[in-house]
Image (cartoon, rainbow, N blue to C red; front, side, top):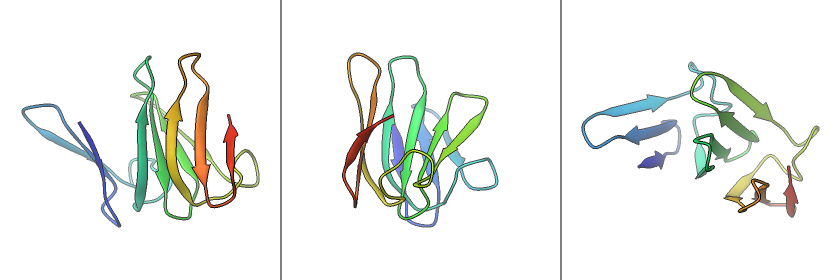
Amino acid sequence: MWFGSIRGGASRFDGKAWTTYSEADGLVDNSVTAIAVASDGTVWFGTYDSGASRFDGQAWTTYKEARTLASNSVKAIAVAPDGAVWFGTEGRCLPL
C-alpha cells in the first residue's frame, strides 16, 4: 500500500515495514497528491506543484509542465490497460 503526504513524501507499507521516499531519494517534491502503480510495478507520483515522478524500483524520472504535463499541479494519475499513463492536472488530462 502506498500513501502520499503533504511535505512528507510518499510511504509504502509492505505488511511488515514502512519505506518512505522523499526529495532526497529522487522524488521531485515532498508534497504528494496522487499515486498510481502500473502493471509492471512502476510507481507514478503526482505532486502539488512540481510535476510528477516515475520510480521503477531503482531510478527516478521527473516530468514537468515544460516537457510533458499540462500543469505541474497533478491531482490524479491513472494507468490504462494498454499501459498509457494519464495525468489529471489543473490544466487538463494528457497521455504520456
